[in-house]
Length: 341
Image 1 (cartoon, helix red, strand yellow):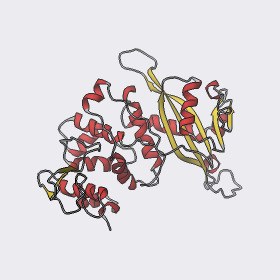
Image 2 (cartoon, helix red, strand yellow; image 1 turned 60 degrees about the vertical axis):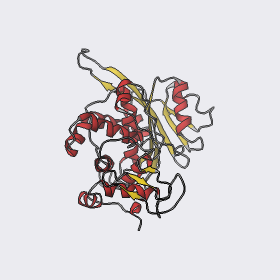
Image 3 (cartoon, rainbow, N blue to C red; image 1 turned 180 degrees about the vertical axis):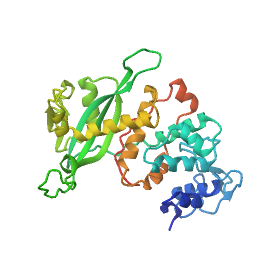
Image 4 (spheres, rainbow, N blue to C red; image 1 turned 30 degrees about the horizontal axis):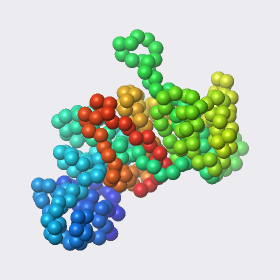
């Protein structure tokens, strides 16, 4: 079995599989060349020269040109050991609540907070890819929420609120007939549960913005697009969607009946942002939404998420620390709804 097809199912197994930088480099090499090394410069297939001090660097025996295993990945130009990157990817992908930069710095023994912060954002940049729109043989719940809260030094009330829009597929489990409504076997929400998810920061709640998000993320062939009665969604029917607009009018039972899944996701999202990260900057909110979507869409495949993260990172561009703080970096919007590896 190729090394790229293996994956440890425990922390001891992970440590055994990736004990040092050389093992991490071998794993990256097996992902790129499943059979044997082929020089991208001269196309010669042969065992390359290897360097103990630079395990991610391979030198072709034919043309003597060097090939970097981390070129074109979020790890490109890094001075951080590969083993640290692998541990960070494993912790981010496998731990259900994920972790903050402070926690990552402590767990990996990093001397600088900035290193942990940049590693996490580089990995998040690899979580946003494109793989088609959600929906089709199901209905999709769509709604917006405001993320933010009290800001220190600005008095009472909420400040710096950011609008986030979400769309989620609604799946249906087989429901057994239960006569007693208090029976614990009775499924919540009539057996409905969440499928694939999309989240994005939007500048406003205008029809152009909201409908643009829906058209970019939800397939027009979906059985039903369910929203509230906000006028920003009024053009969906003209755009070819089967649209159901629900007037909530402050009635919680209406929201529970028609938009329960997307509201539950918003609640979990805010709890995660406040509980794990203690709030995030609006400038970086999209990156955290990308991570939440990546983890959510792979929640049934927790160990495969690590392999997906490394695979998605190949060809992804990661931000530098200066770009993150100068505001020059635009976090990509995730549209990846795939699961597994």
